[in-house]
Length: 100
Image (cartoon, rainbow, N blue to C red; front, side, top):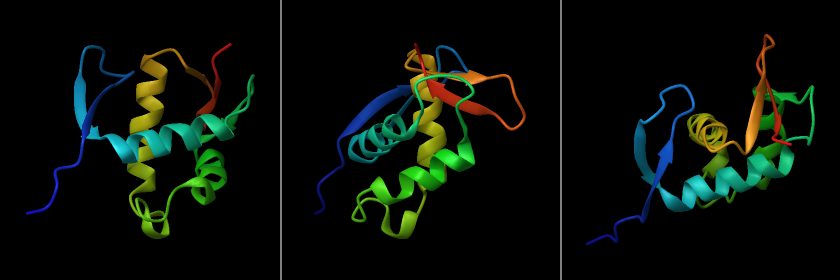
């Protein structure tokens, strides 16, 4: 019988009050990688630029070949926005940076 992955609750910036339970190890790896690549101030980087920079930082055992990294990046982005740790710029495409 396989061990159950430890879960963590995350929030969603675009759906206040909505909480989802996700794999803790994958979330924390993505959160740490995202926070490591985002600049401290505006104008920030696009989500595509952030993904390109963080892919090499992800553990291969959790994200083999970058698998599912896009979904986890969005989940971490929305949770960190809900918690006020990162901010989005009202630009197209969307740009992100660390909260001041």
